[in-house]
Amino acid sequence: MPDTTTTGTSHTPPPRPGTGPETGPETGPETRPGSGAGTVPAQAPRLPLPALLALATAVFITSLTETLPAGLLPAMSRSLGTTESATGQTVTVYAAGTFLTALPLTAATAGWSRGRLLLTAMAGFAVANTVTALSSSYALTMTARFAAGVAAGLAWALLAGYARRLAPPDLEGRAMAIAMAGIPVALSLGVPAGTFLGTTLGWRTAFLAMTALTVVLLGWLRLTVPDHPGRARAARTPVRHALRVPGVPAVLTVTLVFVLAHTILYAYIAPFLDDVGLGAQTDLVLLVFGAASLLSIWAVGALVHHRLRHLTLAGTVLVAAAATLLALTADSAVPVYAAAALWGLGWGGVPTLLQTAAGRAGGEQADAAQALLVTLWNVAMAAGGVAGGLLLHLAGPAALPWAVPLLLAPVLGVVVTARRHGFPAS
Image (cartoon, rainbow, N blue to C red; front, side):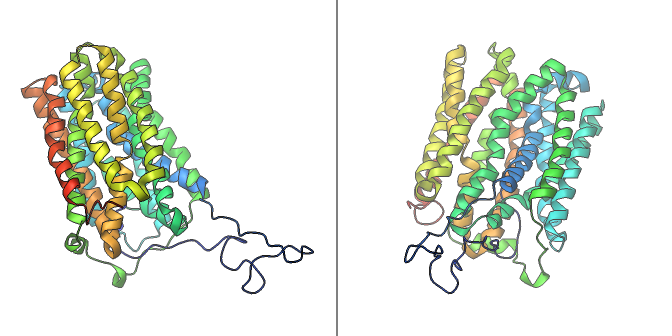
């Protein structure tokens, strides 16, 4: 998820030997002994992949923890003795835990060591997922899910900022794409895998598997991700200042409505597929969605610096087209799988696109813009869970896809009109 750090400036790591500006004994290029006037070009800066992949795994775990119930609603509902729409609120309460506490807790812990805070947040995930796996009470499950959301708010306050600070300036976009790939990978591969695991070994096993992954990740983070000090009070910038920056309100509006539209359908995809006779293929449909999302991640990572506007427009159109195809032709398996592929192609790169747009538009207020973005992202997740549950209860599963193009129409309008600030042409 996007960075919710509200203050300070980006830091770049010191240059590695032979890669920084001091490549020779004085100021000239490096010379190889005995080679005369021959020179050896400075080595190109490299990304710290072990650390970035650890961050991507943290993003994956936090995102998957949020959306894992989407593929397990029927089984969870039977175990907890509730309806599917009520169980779907486990997604809503997780998001509520994040957006209600992310900003105040981030401000309260601004002086903490960043590494210690990240490890604390991820340890909280391990505890919350364990309680969810063992609980037979709906109230206790909802409490554990809220606690997991609180841990998410703390973790997401750090992850994207860490990715930027670990990379050389000209590779920050690629570093962000690697770290944020955990979001679409969780939605695309994690949820299908969790759904398969849950349907074969029980939904509780899926949550216990998340605990095990988190324990492994704690060691990985400790070994590969460098620590950073907290920030002095005098260096902090109020979040509200970002709203005055041209382009930031447009990016935040797109974030709120786009994520809302996606969540309304995604959080209840299992009941929708069950209604059209494809409930047994939920994991396969999500796998197709996932494979397409990975392709989208790759394309966005390669093109985001020069094609931000075009990629955002394309993603909006593809997701709207996918939902329309589901609404019109869901009585056949082939169109459903085609719609899943279009959906993945449109959605996979959206987290990177929106975070990049917020960072560029925010300028000196980039951290504050990211704080607002992650808060609105989770407001949209929570609202999508509620709105999707109401649609499911009042109008049935067939109504869910129609909400997506209706909401994405104004998103398309905002992106088109924000050509100078927010989503510039280049």
